[in-house]
Image 1 (cartoon, rainbow, N blue to C red):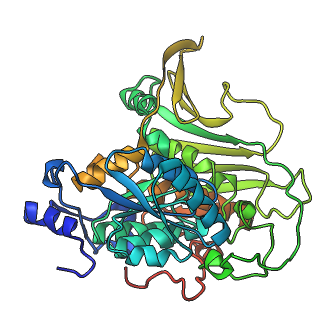
Image 2 (image 1 turned 180 degrees about the horizontal axis):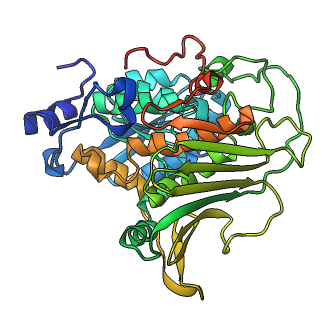
Length: 448
């Protein structure tokens, strides 16, 4: 038995005798095509007993991580045992709030690797900055932990392939934080698309219209006391400290974030791929720029990307606007799917409505959410990837779509892409941008 294999994993494996099947995920075509990975065993919930408790460590608690804490603590037989953040000031504040709200203790760690070494931690919930998502998730898989990872699950395309490899090799349940996948309404909407409600679906639009103001330029300053800035930077270059990055505006700088198409937009890129029933495109073009503010943001304020699927005769349009704008069928963040018999609008994460025919007569509509976090925990207890609404493959594909658009934007040209090999055709500058240079010791493992 492997040293990092928990008693629960051993029981789950012993209960079935062997893993259920062996597959080669689509994301590993090309150079990885000969490397199959094992699916985790499917085990009935009763194998663990009624008192089986999942102990979670939350990574990154200054923003979205607060929601992770609330989601975990609201679940039966689940507890947040440790919170991790490179800022000790944030940790102490959140520890105090946790103990006041939940009437129990929680451990704190600036170095998340100590939580990975803790054999009492079963799973990790990752809400750190984007540049840390995939590495922390891969390290967690290697440590025998299941993973819930915020969108985008990756900072670049290459990381998605490695994350899938880690999930399958270590039999981990890796859930992507795209909550609309668990919405009863959106699941119904996608089924309507499959069943032909609006006919042959040939185009999807993703829209992200968020109010993003001028962030100015705060310049260089001393590292605040209590912040482990080396840990915060992690695999990214350790540039002089600036408040332009810590704690939120890193989203608008390429070394750490991916702009709004890779922030809010991952919900919508995921819905585009899911609803249109496609993978990665063959042709990408993106353009835009900073037309509003003379601030320190590196990413575009306005961006339009086109993803073309010539073999499938389908296309995705994706648009980011950061200030005053109209809505699209009352949606400011959502999707529109077009077919030869009508169109269907997804508004946010929990509502859809449809319009049919030339006269745009109202078709089916529904509003209703779901518990995406609970879906992850249910899959953990069952050791069954097939139960997941946001499986590890979605981590890769929906994030990669955003990355491909950003590469085209940054290079200023249309790109041809091989979706099987996951390489650009005849463009080594673009291929270089599929990955990044990792700063030691926070390296992507050569062998997963």
